[in-house]
Structures are given as structure tokens and as C-alpha cells.
Length: 150
Image 1: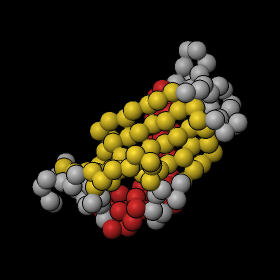
Image 2 (image 1 turned 30 degrees about the vertical axis):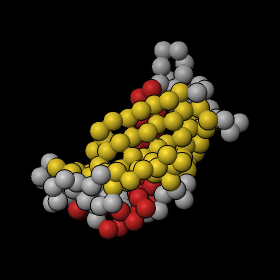
Image 3 (image 1 turned 60 degrees about the vertical axis):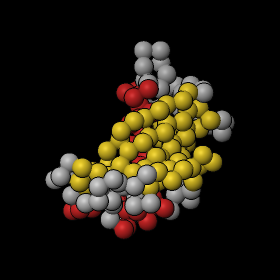
Image 4 (image 1 turned 135 degrees about the vertical axis):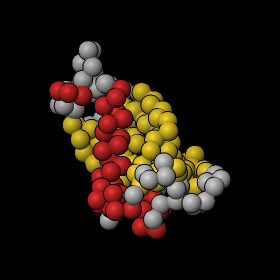
């Protein structure tokens, strides 16, 4: 499934040119990921309970159109890659203008960190199922598993 949510460009989201600032794209992408996990039975309290958390190793932002103050934004979330064990992921957010045109794309590569051991780990089954429930991008790829199993 393609998960999506409506947002709005707020005052604090703007850069000096009056456009949605680059870090606002990253913030809204992270918010949508956490909203997706919470809506699939894995709220922040579950991360704490399992002693894990998401860690983003890289973000790539592609810009196509601009957003300005108070404009609505439709943001989608899909999977662009996942390892068989679920420990590594590549998630993609796409930002759409009110006219339906693609304005930006954020692709985030990361994994699940065991907070105590400070190492990547396979997620609990419910979290892995949530990841598997996302639609896949056209360039989806199976990522490598962890070299060292927890």
C-alpha cells in the first residue's frame, strides 16, 4: 500500500527565499515514517519497549517544483529496498503539489539500531510486517542482510 498524508507548509518550514527549506523535507519525511509505523501497531512506545530505533545513514533529496507558505502538501511513503532480515531499509517519500505534480523526492537509507548494543539489528516481526506492507518503488531492490546476526 502507498501510505500518504496531507501536510501544510508552515512558517517554520521556510528558507530565506520563502520556499520549503531542504531540512523541512527531511523532517516531514521522518514524521510520515513514524506516523506509518504508529498506524501499523508500532508507536514510539513500542520502539522503546523493544530497545530499538530507526537510524538513517543517508538521505537523498531531488527537487522538481517549489512549495510556499500555507500550501498543502501530499506526502507518500513507499519501500525502495529492504533486506531479507528487515534490518536494512530504503524508504522513499514523494511530495506532491495541490495540482498533483511531483515537487520533490526523498530517499532515505537506514536500518534498525539496537539501542543497548549500538549495532544494527533485525526488527521485531510486527515492524518487519509493517515494512513489507508498503508498496514498492519501480527501482526496489533487495538489500544485503546483516553480516553479523544479533
